[in-house]
Image 1 (cartoon, helix red, strand yellow):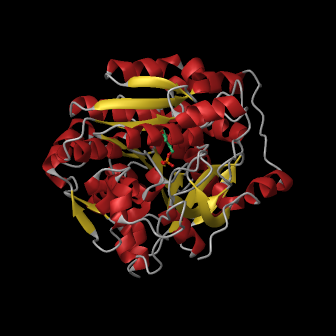
Image 2 (cartoon, rainbow, N blue to C red):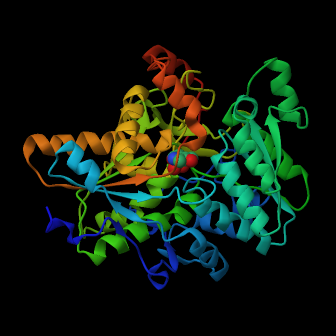
Length: 459
Ligand SMILES: *Cc1c(COP(=O)(O)O)cnc(C)c1O
């Protein structure tokens, strides 16, 4: 054992070893992700159309399937230095507890006030909005991680930030709401009575507590109607995966320092941004035939886009104002059971990851939430960090794979993404402790009902 610990508990990079360019995995994909389509005409969205909604430079990144490396502007690299590089931690204590011959590493993205990896893209998106001379940006947030990250980024660049927060979270999760206000954001419960789409949804569903898809529609409407504003999104889009590649690039650089080659790479998948970012450089090697890895996406059994969804064009929002994206989806009306506490509740999945999954380049598994919280506690008790429920999906599968190694005696190297901390998720932990958490899994009939409502698109 003593000899093995030549590898430190935490592998840090020096400042000058941090990535200077993001890696764009699309450049190495043979089958490119399908283009976004205009929801009215079903034709691919042009840059000009997209620029009505999104910032100019971000549209360019969204449509760029060719350039493998895109320089990270100095201003963003400077901001990254405040909370990055994030540590790659060798989970010696977890390994010992599990008595597994597997070697487990996790990349911890929770060391910033927003508490997750979302700041990596928020700061990039705010930078490009500022560069374009905009007044501000609009967005949606569910539980508030993305809204918090964006508020921090906007206050840094002195931009106005309008956040539409799913009403049930606005009312039940006051803490993140107030953190956003600390950073100067305005936070509106969605559906509101300030937008056409909000009024319509309120009229059709009186008393509705909102959904992510509905908050997206409101945020897009406000961005399009207010001069000097654009809409920004914290996951799913190609540009977000690009920014998040900083996670994978740092991970790879840290592993390379000690000549470590992972066998299995695991990440939780909501819209796919952290997983996409973590795996990008490894997937690049796989696509170029230079190396092989098992890559596993972990999703909740209550919101199983990859494992039980359809690979089809679908709306990204409830109001059907956003472009159509080809992705693994459960249908834009799908809302996970009210008892679902673990996050990762978006109906769709990143088009990049959807294509890679469809091409058999990665795997996906779904896990039940009580099993996720069991893993979270097991992890917290030996590794110290209180994990976010989202991140704990990856912990679950990392532990399961390590236990398989225990049976077979294989010394596999497992790397997983620990996306954030769970301090604001104690109500979910409370439900788990009090035995009030169940594992509702949608039936085939329910999923078929939503799938039947997918838009008809001739490809
Ligand atoms: C938002 C979030 C996720 C899921 O989003 P992805 O885009 O799938 O990465 C995972 N973990 C944490 C802590 C989050 O805040």
